[in-house]
Image (cartoon, rainbow, N blue to C red; front, side, top):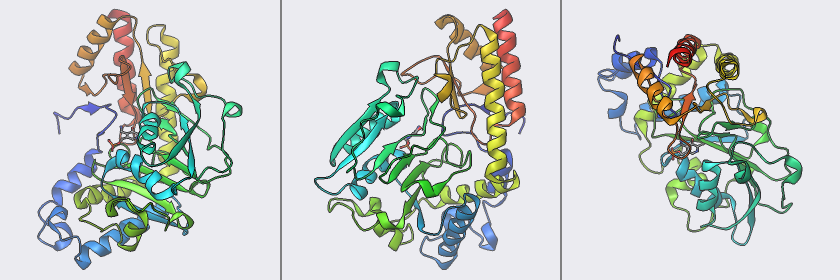
Amino acid sequence: MNNRVINFGAGPAMLPDSVLQRAAVEMLNWRGTGMSAMEIGHRSPLFQNFLAEVNAKFRKLLAIPINYKILFLPGGGKGQFAAVPMNLLPLGASADYLDTGVWSNLAIEEAQQYGKINIVASGAESHYYSVPERKTWKLNPQAAYFYYCPNETIAGVQIHSIPQVDVPLVADLTSCLGSSSLDMSRFGVIFAGAQKNLGQAGVTVVIVRDDLLNQAQAITPSILDYTQQVNNHSCVNTPPTYAIYIFDLMLDWLAEQGGVSAIEKSNRYKAKMLYAYIDESNFYRNLVDPTYRSIMNISLTLPTEALTQQFLATATNHGFVGLKGHKKIGGIRVSLYNPITESMVVKLVEVMRSFAKTG
Ligand code: PMP
């Protein structure tokens, strides 16, 4: 794998070499079937048993309590922006949303199609580099649920403690699920596309507390209806079978790393190393309020646009890809998802350091 680059992109993200190698080895004969995992009928006992196995493995790894159902659905994070209100917002009711950046903003826009949305507070004034203080939130005690995005992938803004609210808590964990331990009992529903910390695009993990089922709006398409998906073991239609297979390989890899608490420790260490260098550099700057700095996505600015472009070219020469900032904010963005190792971050910091001196 000499040509392999280090992909610091925000997703689809890189996968560990060992996971790709295992997928390659199993490509022509998965579990003695003489087929790849993508060629197996989803209703076959083999695949149904496999789904149950992945479900149990994931539940154990993330310590998900028994009163929650785990679903593997198509439609991505964005599909869930619609699915959440369709499943949890009865006609005439209202839901609370915290606006902290591009992704929660898009979730608000989508949810407004299906019901009344109360924006409890917005980070827009800080250009989404900070989060409004809890005491300023205008909560509705009758809200059907409270929705937020714990890690805003674009600016790299992370809410590190779970908000205390009196209604079911819903969270978009697309860019952080599986990167750190999770107290699921605090949430009503969470969802995440797998393409960042847990595998490839195509499968979205949805975890729903039992008491929140059976209240979908009548217009809800069956593939987005949590209750129908629970009753059909995520097989209302053909599920993204190969993406679920890669997800399973990632769960095995995660277990080999020592599980979620070990990967969390490493993720925190990687981010600490990078922020420490940025802060001492007097060259790179991270504009995020230090309280909300993300451990997954770190956005940076350089003194000029020309230097930014030069840095990206230098990075490419060193075999680093995916560092260009999101088009909405420019600059550089470093994503440090699970498969990025500590030594990869050391290499990046070395290149950043030498560029700041000579670049
Ligand atoms: N939420 C967050 C936090 C994201 O980062 C993304 C994708 N980058 C999405 C939702 C949308 O996910 P998808 O493209 O799978 O619909």
